[in-house]
Length: 135
Image (cartoon, rainbow, N blue to C red):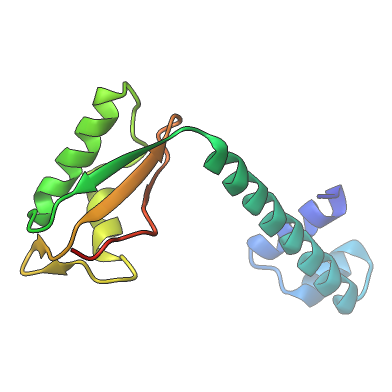
């Protein structure tokens, strides 16, 4: 990202309008809009690059069986991280939120209704596996 893109994003991030930002940089509102859009596209590409890189790291799978109580799930996940001597970058609340926010609902009456899986890499980045399997 260029220095100008960075400065414009900073101004917009602190609440300046595109017109106010344009005045500050002695340019047009349309130019600010274009610079902001290009900067955001670069940021999105960088995020995708990082995600691709992280997918190349060794992944560990944690399978949580059907009928597991919601509040027991973090123990499964964190214990697996400990077993591999990897500090999971999520706490109990983060893990519970992942389960509750799953695209395919996997809870009923506080227990899992199907087997669910988490994946974490050697840096401890945790995610709910896309492959939530039906059993």
